Amino acid sequence: MVAADMKTYEWETKYGILQYAIMNDENTDVDTAYRGISGKEVMLTGYKGKDIDLTIPDELSGLPVTTVGKKTFLGAKNLRSISLPVHLVRIQEWAFASCTNLETVFLPGRKIDAGQGIFKDCMGLQRVVPTAADTSLNAEKAFEPTVMGKQDPDGTVSYLLAAAVNKLDAFYLFDPAAAGSSEWFKQWDARMLTLMGQADEEGFSKMLLCGEEDYGSRENNLDYYVEQRRRFKVRLAMLRLMYDAALPAEIKKELLCYLQAHKKGADSEETWKVVLEEHGDERTYYQFLLDYDCIDRDNFDAVLSDMGDRHTEMKAFLMNCRDKWADESDAFGALEL
Image (cartoon, one colour):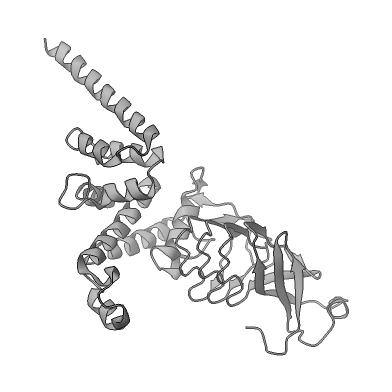
C-alpha cells in the first residue's frame, strides 16, 4: 500500500505513463538512496495509457520491481498482454481488475502473493504463463512450466492457471511454481467438480435480494440465470477436456456426459450455443463437438440451419465431414453385400 506522503516517479511506456514508488524510501532522492544501500525495491502504483502489449522492466531507477500495487492497472481496457518483471513476488488487491480485454499475462514461475480480486472482471483472460524466474530473489531454481514433470507444448498450465482465478475463483490455485504438478491438478479438478455439481438455480434468490434496483431485468429472470449457469459449466467442461492432462477417466466421462446432455437437439442446447455464439469461426471448437459426438448425424441438419448464412468456412468444413460420413456408410454397405 502506498503511503500518502510517499514520493512517486514515472516511467514512459510506448503509449502511456507507469507510476511507481520506492518502498521504505518515502522521502529520499532515488539516486542517493540507491548508492551502496541494498534492500530497496519498487512497487508499481498507477498506470494511464493505451498500450496493447506492455512489458514491465525488471528494474526501475536501478531497483528491482517486486510489487504490483493496489488497483495499479484498474480499468486499463486497451491492455491485451502484459509481461511482469522477473523479480515479482506480490500482486496487491484489484491490480488488474476490469481490464476487460486482457488475454495473456506473463509472470515469473514462483509463488506469487496475490491479493483479492487481482483479475476481477477480466473475463477475456485466457493464459497466465509462468516464465523463468530470477534465482537471486526467493526462487528455488529457474522455472519452466511442465505438466507432471514433462514439457507442456500445448500450454495446458497457462490456460488452467488463468481459469483458476477467472473461472474457478480459486486463488489458492494461483501458484505458478506448483501449477502442473499432480497435486495441483487434483485440487483444480476438485474445485471444478464442486462448481459443476452446484444446482443451476443456486444463488438466484440471493442475487435478487442484493439487486432489487434491477428487478424485472433480464439478469433477474430465472430462465436466463439458469441458462448462463449452464453456459458457464459448458465453458469449464470444454476447457478441461481440451487441456486434459492428468484428467482421470471418470471425470472425463462426467464432463462429456454434461456436454452431450446440452448439445443441439437436447432439452437445453447450451453446448451448441456457446460454440455458435462465442466461437462461430473457430474450427477447433467444431472439431471438438464432432470428436465428442456433440454434432452427429441426428442433429447435423439442425446445426447447419442455426448457422444460417454466417460462418461459411465452418459450414463448408461440416459439409465435408458429412460427405465423409456418407462415404463411410457406402463402404460399410459394400462390405455387407
